[in-house]
Image (cartoon, rainbow over all chains, first blue to last red; front, side, top):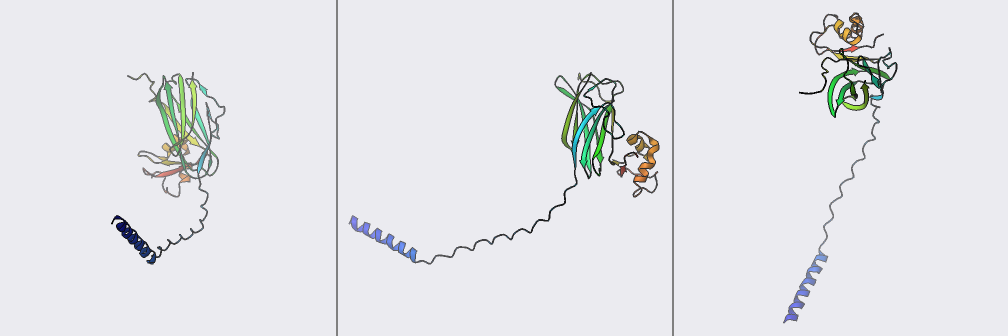
Amino acid sequence: MHSRLVHLLVAFAFAVVLGACGKKAEPPPPAAPAPAPAPAATPAPTPAGVTLSSVSLGKSVGADKKVTATSEVFAKGDTIHASVDTSGTGSATLAAKWTYSKDGKTAAVKEDSATITPTGPATTEFHIAKPDGWPLGDYQVEILLDGKSVATKSFKVQ
Amino acid sequence: MSDMPDFSNVQGGSSSTAAKVYEVKPGDSLSKIAKSEYGDASKWPQIFEANKDQLKDPNKIFPGQKLTIPPLA
């Protein structure tokens, strides 16, 4: 009895397999068309942009806005200049953020910005002065170009 | 009370070999702008000349106007 049941099950399974083999397979779905090749990109014109070249500190600047003698040490009564050289053309906003540090604390001294429209290499000068003299200590100027920090320079007043 | 120095009286500014853009503020005049940008109020005609496309009268400038400040000749 048991063996007849097994035979029946095997026969049934065989029939199912045969039936499946005889069934016409459905055609595979058509492949998604290949994306049309992107049109050759027209080379974008080189974007006009202003980039920072260098920053120098000094006690005075010439008509070319460059410091006459670089210095990182100043006296109490000095006017402190940061001369920022840029290259490139277009419009850009330069900013100078001056800070003072003491015992791990930092205080804002002054922040100035200038929007420039250079047509080539240019020099922009930022300066600070304090009528009653600078407190002795460590200072820093951070230069930002269009809001992004691009350079920092440390200096001392002693 | 902070033991940091007072920097409220610090004076600052900027100048450039490139033309600058200046946004007119209430109460500004060309001579006042020339004083702040060049350190010399009498240089205002340079600013007027550089902005003749938008200024017909040197006495009529408006807050928000953007003026080109040419480098000093």
